[in-house]
Length: 263
Length: 254
Image (cartoon, rainbow over all chains, first blue to last red; front, side, top):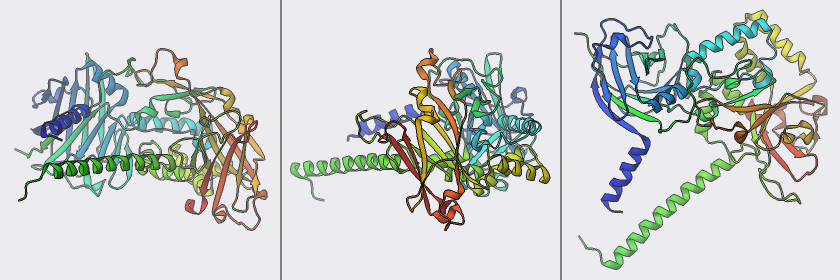
């Protein structure tokens, strides 16, 4: 095969996977931004704009957390984000390994087969209501998958570890904001701690959640079972779903981030 | 350095081509083999990790579940009609059969008890209620999910004969069958499966509970684990050649 063919093949592969790369300096966060998706606290921070994707991304950190924010203006990508959520890959060693996946909201990445084994049916109505509340919290939470330890964990709002993430659809833009502890090794021991001054790699997947095909099919029945097999629930949550089929492939953006040090 | 003659170049390029074709074929064959016989480890891992339920419960569930009638079957059965006048074609169901052994039941009780924030006494009551309702002191419970994109008729429990077969060829049919209502697939708005006509995308599933009488199992076995393996068979009541089967490795469950 000639070198031009190799180059062509490589280019096609890169185009098909939809990867974009950029090196950036993280912004030092003097005050911890609230994770609400408004991105007002990011106005003075330097955001990287990916014009071709109509996406902007920013990274900040303090001595405890790394903060990742993004805005999506492309209508097709917005639809995909609303449908599949956002996935972040964090590689504390600066490579592009996808061993630590952070999905939000968790409901877009995680199945909930609560009718399995009929354990749900044996709960009392009061117990079901409590469990339903808990599951709703989990669905809104952050799913972290540690592929090195073959483990996963869901962090609900207000968790003491500090994992938070949110997606907001407002004024024609879809924004997302996430907070991840720098001392990641405390929760996922097979990963190295991220320290200010160190270079880490952050991957952002838009519409790239794993296994979303099966999640996007709901079973409806006389028996209480709806979205994600959640008993008694059905339909898309909130106002996120817009309808129509995505027109673009999932996008993956990698940032090589030098974590800021205190001034 | 020797320069290559044109014949050597041809041989070399052919050898490289052969290697590439060989590698490609190998990859295809490997892919097919793993897809036909077993669920690939990364798929199973993904199932365990991509769940709102805990990975430990998912792991227990996956270990106790066999899939019949699917090309990615973990069962050893044929996904195809075994000849017959009705012609050849795919087995019309995908069957997930879960052997609800004591470890899985306890895992489920704890998992759902955690979701419902049950204290110790409530958890105990929940455990008793679950076991009593299913008469687990007298029955072996198999939780079956059947799915088809063909006629609903195939989802009728009465259309099928279900039985288990132990290593001594004892065939045991369920003493009680409970079938739950049919559930239809609804592609979520915005999903890649959303179509203009929902009828064009009609897959349906049904959950069926099978209760096998414990006393029918060989008395030499004191626990399910001592069976070694247990075969699960699903066959068409009108045509015994339309069948699928899978095998639980009971020792591996414990």
